[in-house]
Length: 362
Length: 263
Image (cartoon, rainbow over all chains, first blue to last red; front, top):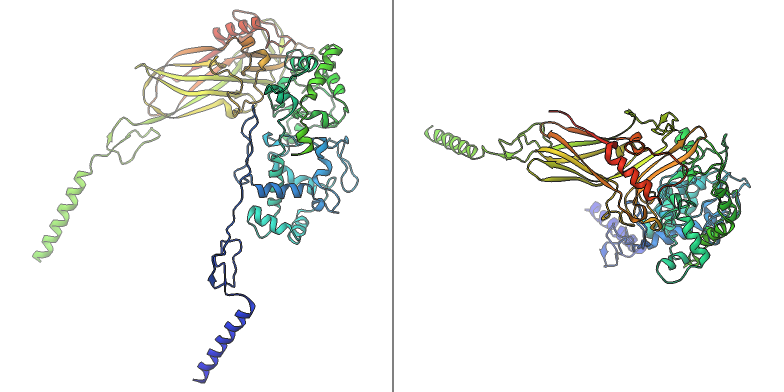
């Protein structure tokens, strides 16, 4: 009898203690975002995980964007990705964000020929402009990444870029005041794993869409091109200029790799060939889009040309022979023999691809 | 005892009579068919078969090797092949009873991706097929800018509106002569003229009991030889309707051939 009384007392104490620690009512559904382990009765306050879809509008003349099934676009994910893209927290010494080398005013590229990492070390290639890259089928000048998610892993840990360790990034983000909540809202996760970091960044990068240049307005009959711009458009799309084979359609790129005759052998940068280990891919690099090309200088994979005039002059000269030079560089050693007017017209046309909305941000 | 006997008899009767009613099961009884039904007792003509189309590419009858300056054309020019991409459309089987079966609307083939050399047709009806036909390139109904935005040959195969719009039919590229100059035999609708052409090959194919392979071969050298001897050139030919007409004529003559198993 005494024993039973003691037990009863214990229970009473137990409940009393519990009552002091937390309210007995709350959300009792453990699939809810605000599930309370202490709640005994459900008070109808449960909030379940939901995200707002981010709709990508496909520009005229573009295919559907290829978005991975496991990383659907959400408003929450894009906002988180933008914050991460602009936050130096990803770099080891907290000094460098993605946007430092992919600056919006330069078409999300670097105005310097080579970008400088946190340890003051430079690479050998020009930072790629991030324009309409949601339609790319591979990333980096050499195509070494097949998805944006995969690509975003690389600069963070690259010793000549952000030189961080993903384990360190994870622990920094998990102990941050804001990020755990933002990741919870975007992905419904309680621990920030690096996979979710690159997923958010990739979502943001897919929103970097440019399709409202003067040229687009011309196609929509909202504006006229000058005689010089129209002349350049015609040369661009003729066999004489032959720009369109690699920079065709409203995407102004072909999603392929080419050796455009920059150098004779031996090559200092094997490009795609180093990735595929196939000698016939040596010195081939990914075709960039020409949209906003006016603001993504310097040009070529190694940023060797600082003006569009130099680029046009390279093609006009015919280019250098090598074993892998593209057959479409048909006038090696002869050149396109464009007149000065034609060269000026080409540059004028290229500048109609500038989209001020994209540079200023909407 | 009597009771037990009665029960047994009743069960046996019920069991066997039920079984008798289930004897006929309709389905495909051919073990070589893709939908062979092991339970079927009566063939209802539903059997389906696989057909494999295989696209091959030869120069002087030998399977093509890319990036090798080892070929010579009718104009006695040495050349190599770096790129070969083309579209075949309306690939169709025709059967003896006059019906036709569309195997593929548009098929893109590129020498850099061997998976494009195969077109596997599943669930084909058993029939005596008497011909196979296909169109080289895209006819004027299909060859419209932005018609194929989501196909693997976009954007690289697009043909500027300045030169008629639509898509390339073929991009055959490489180097020629000892000076290693580039050539680009690009065919398509120059000036908006439809230069696609349809080939129809009589065959005798009874698809049954086996997976059948039909080969469609492109002989590269014949693009340049019969009846028109065509010189490779560093000049682009997309805006040259005369050259396109010559290539079309050669293409119709003997560029393509079809091989099928003799039953």
